[in-house]
View 1: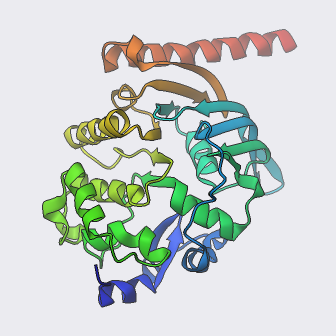
View 2: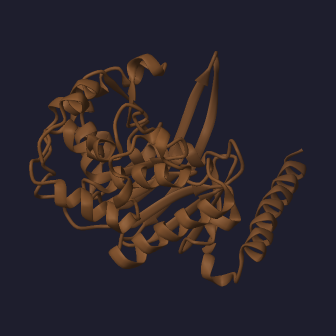
Length: 311
């Protein structure tokens, strides 16, 4: 496959926001990502050959605090979580519970204030910015609610962006076609995002996340911008990726109808992991939703008792 000159020209004017490419004149971005583009273009593309086989995700005693003015705000407290190869885990919680912060820690987009985040046997805190950028590109597939496709590029070039970042491989035409066929978008590869439906755009985003054959896929509210029917189709696709290709998937959601597609559900509340359970124990989304709500209610009741005893 030869490079598309227009694609290269557009790519040269991109920055990375939360690990995804956006045109510089279309987005305001945080200062912490200003150097990410240079890192993407210069970091080596080969993964460490001596990486030991292990659980793709191992989080130990992780805490995360943010500064707001003169105050320290705790987003996560004492989180312990392991995800096994080929497992599909859904992280549930209300807005502000810390679930997206936890996913960002797994992706190396932010660093923990305490504890360790080990991905594929590598402690992310041990990596330099450049090495972390390379590691993320090769080992971690990221899918977000907003798709984050580049408007000026067609679906093929959007999918190829992670490979362009490391030097476009000339033998990737069959790889793109095969991946697009599996995801049901092979007939839409020449179309730009504004010609694609929301479901098709999310499938392109998933293909982009999978193009480097990452160790795991991280999805932050992947159905949040979709209607219910299309959202369920994306859930079915993620389930098939897990079952048929042994993909390891961690997904953030607040919807029981989405979480029920996972193997295991982890519940966060106020930055703490309060419960986890198997989705297969519940026959439908309604029963799962009832159990999820009971967990949140029980957690609130326990906190009230603790507060009374401390008075």
